Image (cartoon, rainbow, N blue to C red; front, side, top):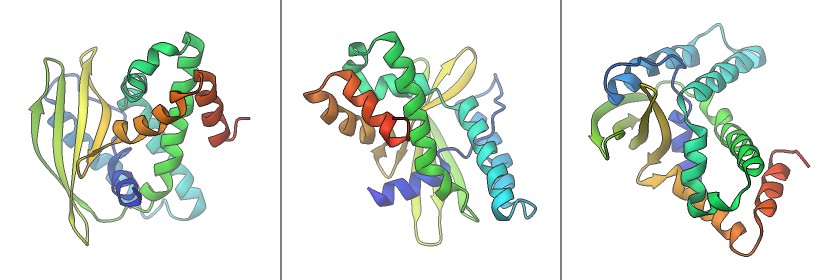
Length: 197
């Protein structure tokens, strides 16, 4: 689990906010990653002040590229239907915060890993998996992005690191909570986790 989190941290938010409306999913992701990597390597962004700037740029990128509603629906599966519209809205915001908090510290320590995008595999008419290999000092780590085309843009809704899906990882945790509890219990658990009691 820790290895998965550390690996996922390398790339989950490493994408700039501006997306080309045309072109394939692989091209869209590949052409934009370098800009964020430049931010991570910028010598001017050192120290605590620099870290804050990096974090904000990562957050802005995540907001633009990731489809957090789609991610939330797929994570909860059929349990999504148990939530009221208000609960769904709050769940998406809380889940988004948890993902950011889980990965941001690790990502800001990114240095010189190399990324090679290998291919894109169509999974349906509007869903594609973009496959990549991240070369670290210790090993090659396969990281695949599941993306969906909405309004002419590709949006990421899942990241798969070494065969382990972000969605599946959290789905198991949330399913256990919802197994014998009402949706409000899950919402309350997430509130506490992000410090909103």
